Image (cartoon, rainbow, N blue to C red; front, side, top):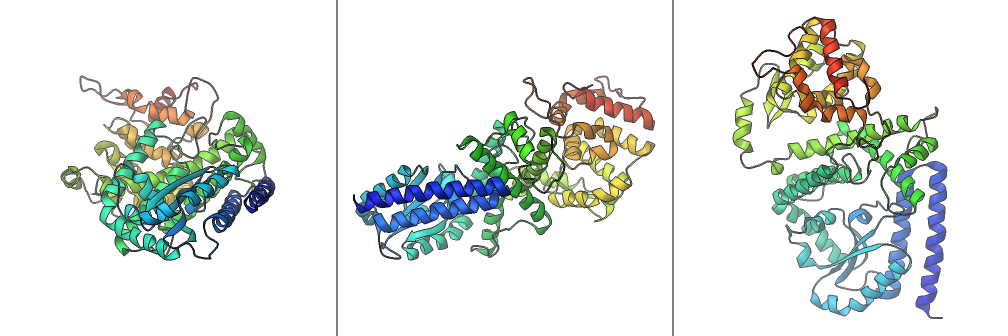
Length: 498
């Protein structure tokens, strides 16, 4: 028996045993990050052993060729059924010809181990250029990591990436934004699917990556080098963002082990099993229904989606050429309470949003002018929520302002923002019952509250002006009547609930 056959058999047994161990430990602990890190280390150790056996026995050899982890493998995100993204990096054509057979054999051995290898081969000069037709490759290099071979060659690649990003930041971000928006569009631009895909849908792991890449590109532009801190997100949102990642990691590991394939869809059956096993929520004491567990999922997905969308909105590179002229006009909308910068609303006084009336006036301002809230403003609202919950808005004035929101031109956008930030239920506690509510039927794709939001643009007419200019809600100035009108409006947009 040849040495190669012996090594292949040994590695196959080793991979099978270690994979079983990782699975058993996950089923016991429920810790997805630990499982992902363990499989990353396992695959890396196998790749390095094969490299030494097939390509070069020298520690740092051969010259002019390096084995580089990219994509999910590069960022150490090897889920149970993830592809193995690797780059064979050459210095020139000579090494590509010289090691062609060795690379083919190396790849075959990886496939024989049932590792789903996703290889690419590039010369260093090719990696130093941005290909607008293949932006995914440049993006994958943002997660590059050395595995074996010529370390000096890899260092040249690593040192060239910040220069490439600085030169091509605008087209790179534009293409990344375009890819992301197309992907979001396939899922209706919402996280609230009855059976969501936790990798590609809005609020999924892909959105986490997009947020990471956008913040990394921004840091490279400023520092013209790799930033020392891998996490470039603001400290104010980092804790919630990372907690959401921990949850999604555990859920994806659960799905991969459950299906024994790269299946990332939370079907109704998978939701039942995840709830019974308390996946991602092992600290919870009480039993969870599938609907309750899905509310936890949507909460985490919403946290990731908001960060991703805000970074896309606030990136200058993603704005059209006429945006500068338009934002100049919008800036004139600023007043003593609210300022408008780049089409986003900022609060003039930091603590102003602790006042329920001021908060409502801000959403009225948004509903009238079609603006978005800045990430800074959203953080201020989240910080004020506990105080607002203890002192909820009430009285005729509050309901009159809410009525004005409902009849404004951009009421649907304002209501969606209020719902996303958990403000709407402060005014209408009755709506808490449909928040992230999953009603299982084959007639709808989304949760009850998402159907409410998605229908708002057509149903908002019950709170808008008629064609003859008269108000369609003329008698809703009193608190009790306004409340009834608002609840009726939302219920009219809710499928299957009256």
